[in-house]
Length: 166
Image (cartoon, rainbow, N blue to C red; front, top):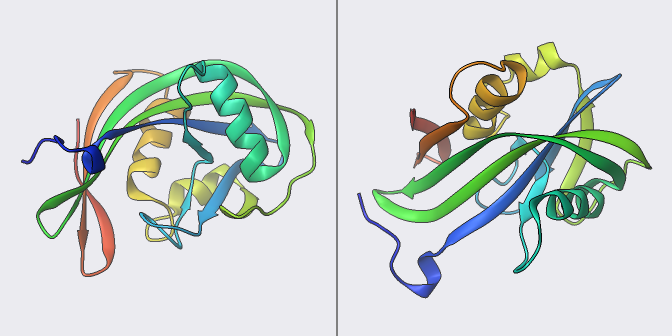
């Protein structure tokens, strides 16, 4: 498996925020690749010098319009996205549990946002980013086991699938 080495193949450090409210879990439908058109956990790139809690609060506000407080780090996932056998992206994903404190839910340039009942989220197969589904299952809904996973996602025939999550 190729290992990132050039400036265009760097690891993207990403803060993801899982917010569970009375209406369920907050998800965003991504407008851009990778994973365009799929629902996922809101979040984004950390800025140099930014602390995780500040990054995830900023990203949630920018993408969803809601204000949140940091509750805990649920876990960390290193993810490689493979497309036609080549590494197309590499991420260090930090999944955080957040609590809504205010703001108004709104669509952003990143995509549509919506609350989903947790049973619906657990049942989403084709419309949820595959690695996000695994993170939610193993790190958010279930609080036992490892807090670190290595993930490989492959794109085949225009669809993403988890090849490995261990």
